[in-house]
Each structure stands twice: as C-alpha cells, then as structure tokens.
Image 1 (tube, rainbow, N blue to C red):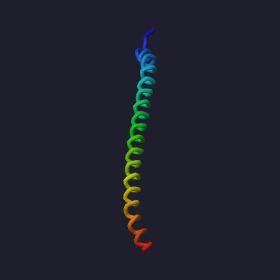
Image 2 (spheres, rainbow, N blue to C red):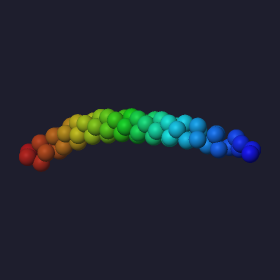
Image 3 (cartoon, rainbow, N blue to C red):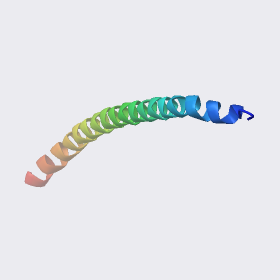
Image 4 (cartoon, helix red, strand yellow):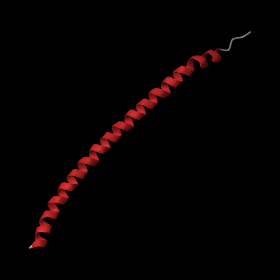
Length: 67
C-alpha cells in the first residue's frame, strides 16, 4: 500500500495554519488599536486647538456686542 505524503503534510500543516491565522489576527488587532489611539490623539488635539481658536475669536466679538 502506497503512503500518500499529502496526508502527512495536511496533518502537520493544520496546526501551523491556525498559528499563522492567530498571529495575523493579533497583528491586525494591534494595528487597529494603534490606529485608534493615534486617531483619538489627533482628534483630541484638533478639538482642543479648535476650541481655543473659537474661544479667542468669540471673546472679542462678544465684548463688542456688549459695548
């Protein structure tokens, strides 16, 4: 009886395939978390600078309206 080598390869490749999938999933999750943190920090900095800008612009105009 002839032994098919593909059977042995599929048995040994199965755990390796799952390992590669888990590693890829962990890398993708880490990349998404990193992008989320980066986006959050950029948006927070923008909103703070935008708020400061609006506070500076609206302060003289509200004082002019009171005069």
